[in-house]
Amino acid sequence: MKAAVYFGPQDIRCTTIPDSVLTADHEILVKVSATSICGSDLHLYRGALDAIMTKGKSQTGHELVGEVLDVGKSVSRFKKGDRVSMGYSASCGHCYMCQVGQTAHCETSHKAVYGFGVPFGDLNGTHAETIVLPYAEGHAIKIPDAVSDSAALTLSCNLPAALIANHLADIRFGESLAVIGCGPTGMMALDIALHRGVGRLVAFDKVPHRLAMAGRKEALAIDPSTEGWKEQAMDITAGRGFDKVIEMVGFPETLQMALDLVRPGGTVAALGVFCDDTFNLNLADVFLRDISLHMDGFANVQPFMWDALRMIERGVISPQDYFSHTYSLSDVDKAFAMFHQKSDGAMKMLISRP
Ligand SMILES: [Zn+2]
Ligand SMILES: [Zn+2]
Image (cartoon, rainbow, N blue to C red; front, side, top):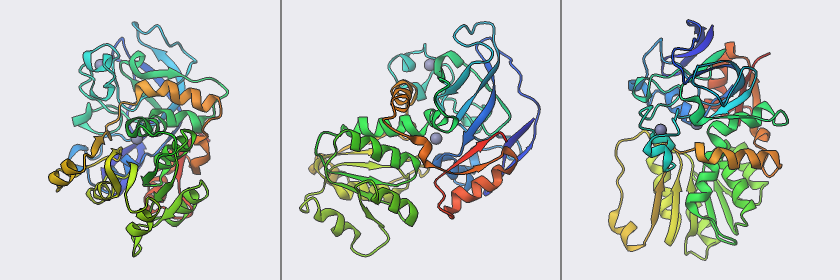
């Protein structure tokens, strides 16, 4: 079958690999209808996670909507023909960590994540014609026909992550919020914050068309590479700083931005995927200003998929609006390049069957 494989930095491409087959009773086999590329996949693409990927073998992709082709003997919740999506981490639903909602830290699958190499369980990826989902009943969900493929696949990662950001930041009516990073997940977090009645809102990004999109959603849109960006943002909080900050990028510099922007007693929810080992945290500053810092890039999306699905079904949020380009699986290398370069108004890539 065809599947995307990691060959090295900026070299993820479609190749032929052995067909997916069921090997355990708890697995299901799914034909991929549509998938996409996550911001976290760009860390793979630029080579920041080169050490965890086996070149020429590790598959990529963790966002899925598809059709069940076959189920293992112990699977009763799914049957052939069901339309499904799944959480990006293969959680069992039964272990201690799953029971307390920390599904990304599942003790049964040992924190297995689709498409992220041997240290994360050596699982297959969604950038493929078919995929095997182990412990499927723990983290896969049925998708109603009325939900589009593009909306449904955001249930694997982006949309629940955006919900988690709002949940961790605990955004209340009228509070001021800064969102750092206006990619798809950042924009979905911004949409949800508006539904929660957020007050003054600032959005940061360096990519003009992404900033413009945030600007059309009531946010003061600021490019942090321009002179005076911080003063411009702080002005709308009377210099006090933001009640809440959502960080959706994953670099030490953007985490520092979040800490610089939050007011005393405020909360930072950092959902970016951080690849650096160290960060020069000013402990006294965080202590003296009573900052609450939540790091959750390795997000426990599974418990939030149900809320996310209800929001899509009721039209509260339209994640399908953030898809800008469509590619076939054979052209997954072109999709990665476009998403990485962020040219041509690139927002989110849909990789679907012709
Ligand atoms: Zn993701
Ligand atoms: Zn578990």
